[in-house]
Picture 1: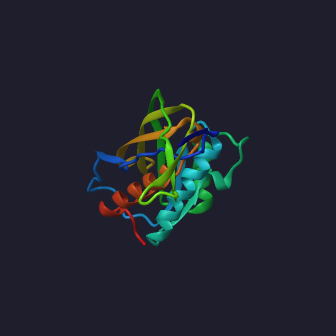
Picture 2: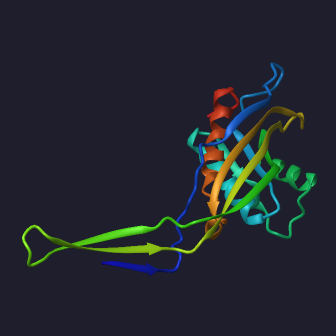
Length: 208
């Protein structure tokens, strides 16, 4: 006996992320005034909420390294001009000795339809006949969903507050797979923040 039941799609995250691939674009020069212990963190994205979440994660990771860090979005609102003077004023008010700036360089997305994976359950019951069993199969099948594959490239530069010049830079490339229903998931930002902070520490830029 087989029963087939179609149910509404379950919001299951179909996500694959191997972590960002980091490339050093600018190594720390010998003349830089590193290491730094007070960093202003800036994310230049279109979404203010996206900037705020990203900066918050970077600040969290830097604090974990013993570095004083502040997110630019904690010192502004959606109406504050996003320009050089605004950030220079923040550097002065916070006494920052470095500024970490992350920009979105590229975002490519491919979509395709994906069949839902059926979920089957079995119910086995004895019959009146010796060694004969009745098996009931219940199969749950969701409708098709759209799968989104993203390739994301971020550029991160560290500026000296005294010289206003970049002293170090990396690029990170991340590949993500998302269900359309979970397209707003941004948990990968935690991995980005950890990778950026790890390379800052590894290259001797942080002064706890």
